[in-house]
Every structure is written in structure tokens, then in C-alpha cells.
Image (cartoon, rainbow, N blue to C red; front, side, top):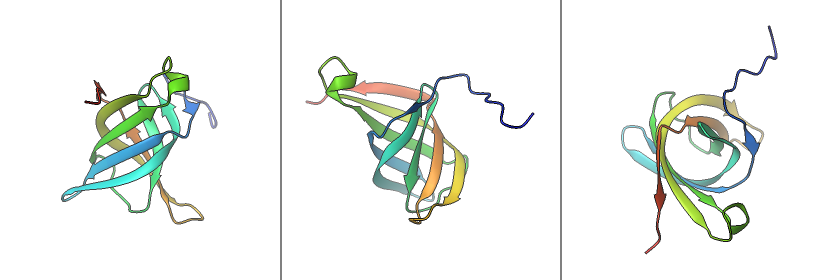
Length: 107
């Protein structure tokens, strides 16, 4: 049936700062922002393509209004699960899973 939503986790449309590292032949790093966030993954865009299955690490920063008055940084590890064609600005949409995460304390 077309158009049926099969997600297990609620998705939130949030533009949060995101520092991303994608393992291609070597690790590549970029700064971007999320478009959607869920407990199991995030969606963001990059200027360079990557392949489905590539390892990905990203630091997700929650602003004070979302985290009881404190900035909270979460370091996540997962895999690229979706790659979309470039949009009008030439950016490529990336869906990535969250398989592990740690809260990062700033020193």
C-alpha cells in the first residue's frame, strides 16, 4: 500500500547543528544541520556523495531550550542508510542510523 508510514520512532523536523564524519576511503568531515531527527537516526545534507552502508559518526548538539537549560552534545555512531539525489542547491540528502551514542562532556 503506497504512502503507509512504517517508522517505529517518531520523527521531529529539527534543524540542529551537526558535525559529521563519514568513512569513505578515509574519514571525511563536514559541518551541516539536521533536517529530521528520530531516536533511531537523523537526516541531513552534504555537498559530497557517500555510499549506503558507509560508517558515520556525528556530534549532535541540543540547545538549552531542549535540554533543561544546558547545551548537550551527543556523539553518535551508525551507518548511512539512505542517499538521495542532489536538491536544487546541489546538496545530497543523507539518512543515517544511530547505532551507538554517548553524551559528551565539555572540559
